[in-house]
Image (cartoon, rainbow over all chains, first blue to last red; front, top):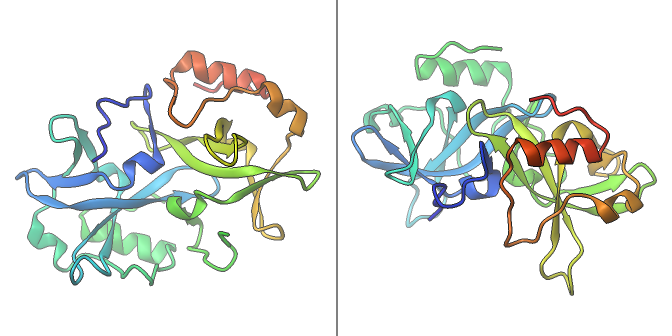
Length: 121
Length: 121
């Protein structure tokens, strides 16, 4: 379990410490964990934190890209908190572990629109 | 070996695919590999890619934070290329695997200054 309150590097976090960190919603339900970031190659901006959960016997987790701006870190829960009802994830954009999509503008707009956000690029 | 030319997600790269990617200098010498990113918590900006190499029998690699802007991806070499002489790394800011520093402004200024860059924050 990653504890970012103990290992705090100023205002920076290490990508390999965030991978695996738990994600909760505001009701305190554990939604899953962060599997990785998606980063803009040109300017180094993190665009998505990918939430993973589900699958059979822990195999083949589904991956849900969440716009980075949706995540806040909660020192009390030692995890990220998103304002996201579990039911909303049922139809959310997702992909299997072995089928990463092209993160093009069309895909990005779909993800942002699903979560009621304006696609900023 | 990560091949970002085959697995290209539009303009985005996956953090867990970059971790482990080889880093070369312009002379074609392999300097090491990327161990992780350091990311600004507030805005999701990647500030450093951490280069790792050295250590005894591959144990206890040293970690060298490189400003993100120093790295370019080379599809021919399937790795990142930095304009960095091997000798310059001899005295470069570094830390052991179990001693991550506070990435505060003082540390950041030292790193940028060492590589002849202006600290932009």
